[in-house]
Image (cartoon, rainbow, N blue to C red):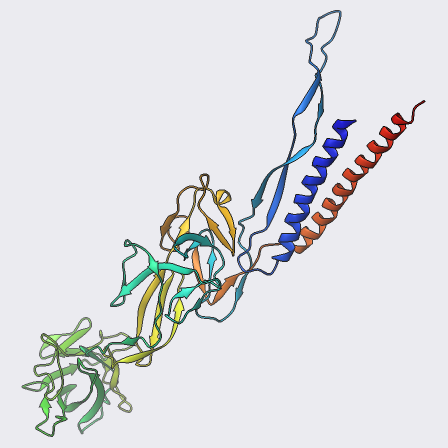
Length: 424
């Protein structure tokens, strides 16, 4: 009698754990990055009533052992680390992991790990979890990240400024009309090392038979004489097909740069600074041509920038955080790291969507997203809970039935005991 009572009590306790787990899953069905948990059961020690006997032919066959169990226990609770649905939020600081891996977080001096990427920026520009944990990664120095260095808090400081970049190349494209008889002017804006605008005027003067003279000038902002970019005019010719053929008598077969002899006077140039006018490869879609029709030649691009303020940023698939600035430039600000483990199931669940290393999880392998066993990131997105409410509600009925059945064993055993007590 006592055995059935103790077995039923163990069943009630196990069913209660089952109900607790289901309740927690349902409660967190909308928690970002939450992983559904399930309960594994195992039977308790069995008491052997009779042992097995071997067959004794031809007189007797073998007999199986007889044992009676003493109940059930919770063997383990396991987390399902399958990826949850990815939900676009449009928030630049959010990120979801597509694949395996965990974000690395410094929570009050302790390193923890999470799948929930609903991050935001604090007053210091740190990328943080909702509970204030510092997301770890690598900072960028002059736009370059060293992922082999130690990780630190990822920071996107507000008001960060992109330094000016002096123009070293101005690229030309478009068409010089084959019927032009007058000089064709092209204007371009370049930048010096301080980010000051440098207005450049390039003049193509037709010499007939597909030949042109190229000169360039820049006015002196101080009011002095303008700067001639070249000491002598550059000679540019075009073939019968309208494609650029030679520059200063040298055949053009690929993208060609014409070095400027004189940097514009009255501007700030760093030591060793250079400036070139670039002609794209003949036959390319961006090449400068000389064909019939209107002239459309112009500067298609230049590689300089004035100083700029950060306006927005985005998180790429490799965790790279790229900032966009008011001057049109972009620059890498940092990179988010990810950790992978030999046994995700071995991680300790700390709450707050945090996990910690345990003796059976293996050590954290921290590296760049998209490498090793680490998944890639999706910016402006969060990973939702992977709890299936349909499954949980079904399991809830099972857990309830188990609980009630075990209480029925107790009431039945109590009735039998009472009958035994009442025997005359």
